[in-house]
Image 1 (cartoon, rainbow, N blue to C red):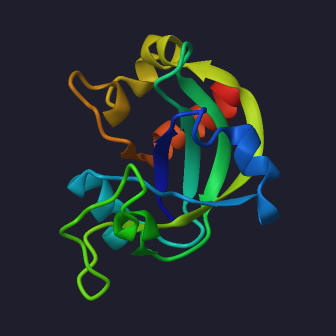
Image 2 (cartoon, rainbow, N blue to C red; image 1 turned 45 degrees about the vertical axis):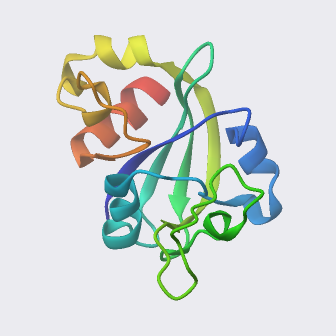
Length: 153
Protein backbone atom coordinates (compact mmCIF):
# COMPACT_ATOMS: atom_id res chain seq x y z
CA UNK A 1 0.00 0.00 0.00
CA UNK A 2 1.16 3.49 -0.87
CA UNK A 3 0.12 6.93 0.27
CA UNK A 4 -0.44 10.13 -1.68
CA UNK A 5 -1.21 13.79 -1.20
CA UNK A 6 -3.64 14.93 -3.90
CA UNK A 7 -4.40 18.62 -4.34
CA UNK A 8 -7.78 19.91 -5.41
CA UNK A 9 -9.02 23.45 -5.64
CA UNK A 10 -12.06 23.53 -3.35
CA UNK A 11 -14.05 25.59 -5.86
CA UNK A 12 -13.66 22.67 -8.30
CA UNK A 13 -13.92 19.69 -5.91
CA UNK A 14 -13.76 20.10 -2.14
CA UNK A 15 -13.76 17.39 0.49
CA UNK A 16 -17.42 18.28 1.10
CA UNK A 17 -18.19 17.83 -2.62
CA UNK A 18 -16.43 14.47 -2.60
CA UNK A 19 -18.32 13.30 0.48
CA UNK A 20 -21.61 14.36 -1.15
CA UNK A 21 -20.84 12.62 -4.46
CA UNK A 22 -22.50 9.30 -5.32
CA UNK A 23 -20.69 6.60 -3.31
CA UNK A 24 -18.42 9.48 -2.14
CA UNK A 25 -16.37 8.92 -5.31
CA UNK A 26 -14.90 11.49 -7.67
CA UNK A 27 -12.86 11.11 -10.84
CA UNK A 28 -9.57 13.01 -10.40
CA UNK A 29 -9.83 14.96 -13.67
CA UNK A 30 -7.73 17.75 -15.07
CA UNK A 31 -4.21 16.65 -14.12
CA UNK A 32 -1.95 18.08 -16.84
CA UNK A 33 1.51 17.38 -15.49
CA UNK A 34 3.29 14.30 -16.78
CA UNK A 35 4.88 13.33 -13.47
CA UNK A 36 1.54 13.54 -11.63
CA UNK A 37 -0.10 11.62 -14.47
CA UNK A 38 2.57 8.95 -14.23
CA UNK A 39 1.91 8.55 -10.51
CA UNK A 40 -1.76 7.83 -11.30
CA UNK A 41 -1.00 5.66 -14.33
CA UNK A 42 1.96 3.67 -13.06
CA UNK A 43 2.08 3.73 -9.27
CA UNK A 44 -1.36 4.18 -7.72
CA UNK A 45 -3.28 1.08 -6.76
CA UNK A 46 -6.76 0.45 -5.46
CA UNK A 47 -6.69 0.85 -1.68
CA UNK A 48 -3.89 3.42 -1.55
CA UNK A 49 -4.41 6.15 1.05
CA UNK A 50 -4.93 9.78 0.04
CA UNK A 51 -4.48 13.03 1.94
CA UNK A 52 -7.17 15.24 0.33
CA UNK A 53 -5.50 18.66 0.13
CA UNK A 54 -7.25 21.96 -0.64
CA UNK A 55 -5.02 24.21 -2.77
CA UNK A 56 -5.25 27.61 -4.46
CA UNK A 57 -7.52 28.91 -1.73
CA UNK A 58 -7.22 31.34 1.20
CA UNK A 59 -6.10 28.58 3.60
CA UNK A 60 -4.49 25.60 1.85
CA UNK A 61 -4.07 22.35 3.73
CA UNK A 62 -5.20 18.80 4.31
CA UNK A 63 -9.00 18.78 4.55
CA UNK A 64 -9.72 15.06 4.63
CA UNK A 65 -8.79 11.48 3.93
CA UNK A 66 -9.63 9.38 0.91
CA UNK A 67 -8.62 6.21 -0.89
CA UNK A 68 -7.89 5.26 -4.47
CA UNK A 69 -10.79 3.11 -5.72
CA UNK A 70 -9.93 2.47 -9.38
CA UNK A 71 -7.02 1.73 -11.62
CA UNK A 72 -6.13 4.49 -14.06
CA UNK A 73 -8.18 5.19 -17.17
CA UNK A 74 -8.32 8.01 -19.75
CA UNK A 75 -9.47 11.41 -18.50
CA UNK A 76 -12.48 12.28 -20.69
CA UNK A 77 -11.89 16.04 -20.32
CA UNK A 78 -8.92 15.79 -22.69
CA UNK A 79 -11.31 14.96 -25.55
CA UNK A 80 -13.89 17.71 -24.88
CA UNK A 81 -13.20 20.96 -26.78
CA UNK A 82 -15.43 22.82 -24.31
CA UNK A 83 -13.38 21.69 -21.31
CA UNK A 84 -10.58 23.86 -19.88
CA UNK A 85 -8.59 20.60 -19.79
CA UNK A 86 -9.03 19.87 -23.51
CA UNK A 87 -5.90 18.61 -25.26
CA UNK A 88 -6.09 18.74 -29.07
CA UNK A 89 -3.17 16.30 -29.34
CA UNK A 90 -4.97 13.58 -27.36
CA UNK A 91 -6.92 10.90 -29.20
CA UNK A 92 -9.01 8.01 -27.93
CA UNK A 93 -6.49 5.63 -29.51
CA UNK A 94 -3.56 7.38 -27.79
CA UNK A 95 -4.83 9.27 -24.75
CA UNK A 96 -2.28 11.51 -23.08
CA UNK A 97 -3.98 12.05 -19.72
CA UNK A 98 -5.12 9.49 -17.19
CA UNK A 99 -7.01 9.64 -13.91
CA UNK A 100 -8.09 7.50 -11.00
CA UNK A 101 -11.27 7.52 -8.98
CA UNK A 102 -10.94 8.61 -5.37
CA UNK A 103 -13.42 7.93 -2.56
CA UNK A 104 -13.55 10.42 0.30
CA UNK A 105 -13.57 8.59 3.63
CA UNK A 106 -13.37 11.37 6.22
CA UNK A 107 -13.43 15.12 6.55
CA UNK A 108 -10.82 16.30 9.03
CA UNK A 109 -9.98 19.58 10.63
CA UNK A 110 -7.90 21.63 8.22
CA UNK A 111 -4.21 20.87 8.73
CA UNK A 112 -2.62 24.00 7.31
CA UNK A 113 0.50 24.20 5.23
CA UNK A 114 2.12 26.19 8.07
CA UNK A 115 1.31 23.38 10.51
CA UNK A 116 2.83 20.80 8.17
CA UNK A 117 5.96 22.95 7.78
CA UNK A 118 6.28 23.33 11.57
CA UNK A 119 6.56 19.58 12.17
CA UNK A 120 10.21 18.43 12.04
CA UNK A 121 8.96 14.89 11.33
CA UNK A 122 7.65 16.15 7.96
CA UNK A 123 10.76 18.09 6.85
CA UNK A 124 11.35 15.69 3.95
CA UNK A 125 7.75 15.65 2.75
CA UNK A 126 7.74 16.30 -0.99
CA UNK A 127 4.87 18.79 -0.94
CA UNK A 128 6.91 20.98 1.45
CA UNK A 129 10.01 21.16 -0.73
CA UNK A 130 10.87 24.52 -2.27
CA UNK A 131 9.57 24.84 -5.82
CA UNK A 132 7.25 21.83 -5.63
CA UNK A 133 4.15 22.52 -7.72
CA UNK A 134 2.93 18.97 -8.33
CA UNK A 135 -0.75 18.31 -7.69
CA UNK A 136 0.00 14.73 -6.65
CA UNK A 137 2.95 13.72 -4.50
CA UNK A 138 3.92 10.52 -2.71
CA UNK A 139 3.73 10.42 1.07
CA UNK A 140 5.94 8.05 3.03
CA UNK A 141 4.37 5.59 5.49
CA UNK A 142 6.06 7.48 8.36
CA UNK A 143 4.66 10.82 7.15
CA UNK A 144 1.18 9.29 6.74
CA UNK A 145 1.28 7.80 10.23
CA UNK A 146 2.49 11.06 11.81
CA UNK A 147 -0.18 13.15 10.06
CA UNK A 148 -3.00 10.73 10.85
CA UNK A 149 -2.02 10.14 14.50
CA UNK A 150 -0.49 13.45 15.61
CA UNK A 151 -2.06 16.13 13.42
CA UNK A 152 -5.50 14.80 12.50
CA UNK A 153 -6.03 12.64 15.57
